[in-house]
Length: 234
Picture (tube, rainbow, N blue to C red):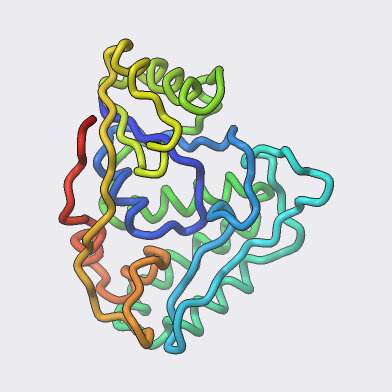
């Protein structure tokens, strides 16, 4: 049983989906603390002038230690984001093919009240579009205990994991020894290199939302969301 655990992000980049696609179960770690200026509520899209940010306005005043799953919106945002996407990509090769499904997700998002619901909605919808069948669950399903690495290990145990695939940034704090003692191997994801594709910006940039890939290459998008680099063990 291969498991990945990542805090939720808004319309993530292709590397996010590359990692998830290599596992059987993906756990959304939304019991973790919300961090300002993170990817939780924002991402970038490409325009002909270069990348721009799409940021969901969230309520943070006097809520310094709220978890991601507690974050609510400060004002309506979905229609504004969709208009920005439409303006940026309406001349993209596969906009006509991809826009209806994405537009539907934004209409659904406009009726939701929390950031974690929105991020899960887009994650599941985009996974489906990319043909990735990994099962997605929320961390609350496992009632996890502990902090940081201990919390991840507790989730892995309860999920029946035999292998935990982690993003590379966790190397700074994750102790592999308790995982090994529990019979769970830890592997580390390496992002990229990824194959380039025709992009509308002045200079190619991999660090944009995966919707950029979908609008550019349509049904071939899955091939552009798989890195040539392979997963590494301890």
